[in-house]
Length: 109
Image 1 (cartoon, rainbow, N blue to C red):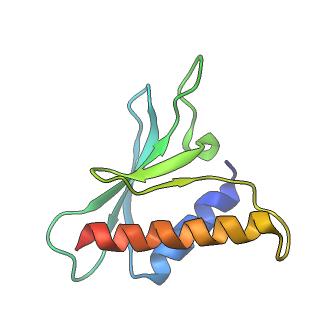
Image 2: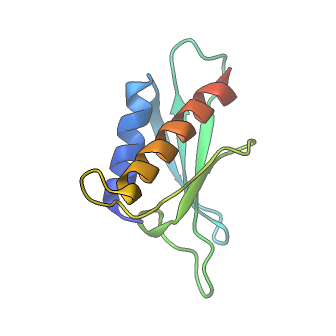
Image 3: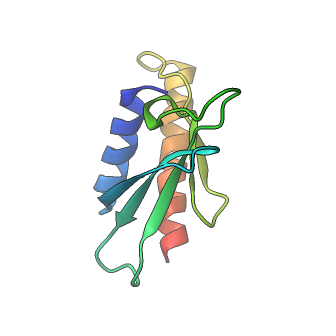
């Protein structure tokens, strides 16, 4: 993963009205860290996005995580290559990011 994954994910969530409430460290094993998200109009509570960090010898930091999931759901996003311009890699990443954000919205209802 790279910073651009985090930036694009956060921007996509913010366009849908989500706001990063807090960032928490991982569990020292599988989870690199988590984002607690909130949105006006969503029932009390919050939505947690966990960043995958399981590696052979250590837990990766969030900036090096390879995927994220919405806690308590099957909605996940793999951090693929960015691709250039209108390349298939770019189109795939954009499509999967959009589907993930739609899943976040669906999970929150």
